[in-house]
Image (cartoon, rainbow, N blue to C red; front, side, top):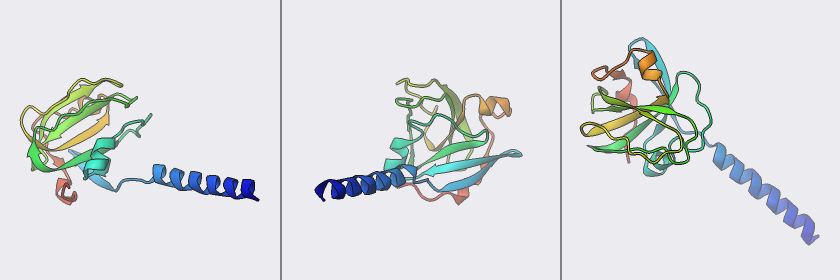
Length: 148
């Protein structure tokens, strides 16, 4: 009886943890010129800290937008992130400040050239392939929740 109860408890705990791991972040549609971006939204400290760690792939126009409660110098690194990414740092209006390429599994700091309110991570080379550079405005920023 005890063994059966233990197995049931273990199965239930496994399902609960799997459900938590599979929990998805809210998504928002952003635009860069005529390019559509489907971005997961990381608007609180826990989600921003997790970011895209442990992800092995992103769909071609999928990314993650990081929403901070205040404009500041928010730096990123790639510890525990196995896929190469590009990051665009954005000001309050969604204008790209600068773009950086980030190699997987590294701890190099990637920081905005001036204080930023948002950061948008996409597959490596995405911004360059689309011809997007500093000064381009990312549309849809106004639909993001406030950072917490």
